[in-house]
Length: 441
Image 1 (cartoon, rainbow, N blue to C red):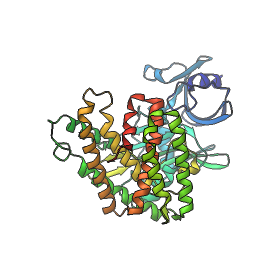
Image 2: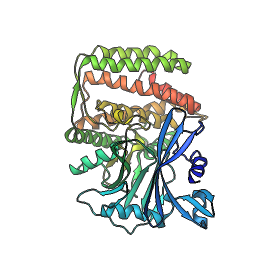
Image 3: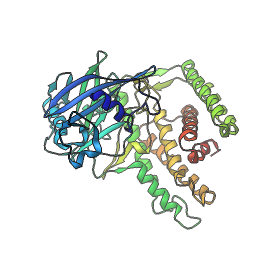
Image 4: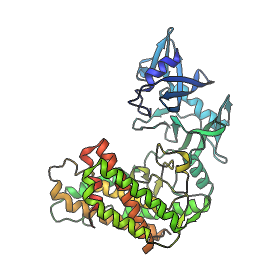
């Protein structure tokens, strides 16, 4: 009964990864009564050869109040089943479980040693997420509930708890987590961290700066605009380097020999070939990308590798009143856990942020009637903030030598190639943004 309701409901959820493919079967793998009528489900969804597990919190009432009608899963035998993350009268169970290190059947609630968790705040669901669901408890905590479950410890939990133990400044304090065993491995179900209610999103701040520049009279440069962002880009570079140093101290490090670097570049070559086949507009830029890849292949120095953020851009950072905070250490969504926890050059994060500056500069040009006239300003803003970020990164202890510069350029182009394919598939009007990455600076 409930399985049939879930099968119809789950395909409409933003976090469901199997959209566009029919569900062959949906099976409730685990059904745990947490407390107070809150049920914790782990469901297995089969779609052809693909099998995924999802986490669902379910409430059941004879009559669903108006405030929860948007969360309805379905009705059967006179009972209304609903997505209980939207019910603050039930989600207090998660807060109390973490505060007291409780266990309910296979579901374990854990508190980070040395912290205290208050249990009085009520929860509110944040509405903008794609793959997870976040509950904000008052102005104190934010609990990220992972919907699609990947067996193993989530990198976000692993990294933030390790860095918090070292007193790292540029992370949101972790408070607790939920876990259960999947395929014999402790698997992160949720993580609760410090909520930053007065902080500003890095992407929004950057766009405000760009918008200010585009509204200035002709001839005004990014340095002269009222919303100049370069000082913040510099501070963000410092913060990024400091987090990289903390990651290198908290986790194992290694070096990659030139043959391994060459194998990485071979993967970039393959991605480029596939991208050109799918997006013909990329073909005229192939020579520039090939030259960058060849420069890395000629490098004979070993490349230091370590744990990194893995999906670093302006949307992953928040500016508080005192400093930059780096969030979401999960790595690239959808990638296998082994890839998200693999050691990599910290320049991978640097390249991701440099690409994000380009995106911020050109985002407002998409479909803009004066795009050609504003092109020079976009280049000016991006160049100024990229340089400020790199300067801050080196000041903070990061390394970008001449040999590193070749690898950084290749990583940027590799990222831009991926972006070209993504935009062609999903937002064709944005395609000029990544294509602009291949023009000479």
